[in-house]
Image 1 (tube, rainbow, N blue to C red):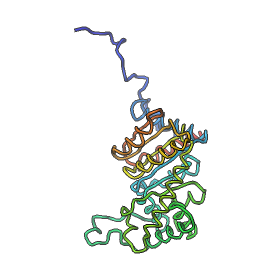
Image 2: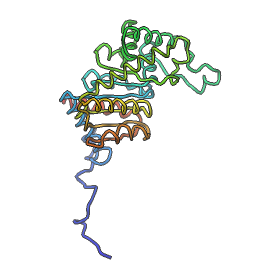
Image 3: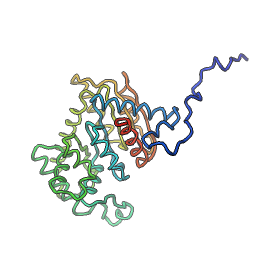
Image 4: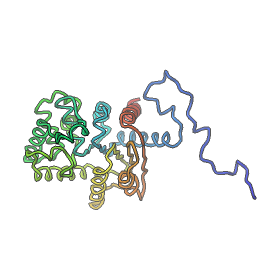
Length: 304
């Protein structure tokens, strides 16, 4: 058997990468200074640096949201990022739009499916589908997409908690926020007020708006928060369209946040789009912890 000295051995962990001792008096925006420069600690710094550089360099930053994210109480951190210019566009699935709309109108959302499904009452509230389907049908008839239709409706209706709505804030600030639905996946689709043709037209418009917002993605950032299927699929097709039309959308930084690792976000956001450059980063954990922490750290880097 032949051995080699420790000095000649390749090594992955050095004491220089270790976390420093905690300092309870340090400001919350400096939390990343107290993380090890290993694994997720290293990935978090890479994301924060890339995101800060993209914002300051006026690059494209797209944030995508699944429905569960809106139910975890992270509206204020997301709105703070939107107000600071940390997103140039937002995209969400239909469930996320429903929860955001209900929060704006009534200050609550999310029903216990197990308790209502057996009696046939799941998704059978009156106000949500009536108002949301009206907003979509009227907005699409005016040439809008789903996201802007819903956001403008909330503003016009003076929704009591519009201050906590991503839909309303994006419409107010003229920031693209698109809603992407598959017909039959949302409780709105169970009701007679639902118009499949207008919803389909509106979500197709939003697909084109999302693709247009991804022009110049090279050097930018894409973040997917909690969408396991719909947004990764929509993103992949929009990216292919943008590249097919000759826009600069090569290397970029992509990050996926979710409670577990899923196939489509890993493949369609972190791997397949980055074959010619860029970096894909995966963060596993609860949204109610990750999003406030990441928002705080990024805002501290943008406004030290």
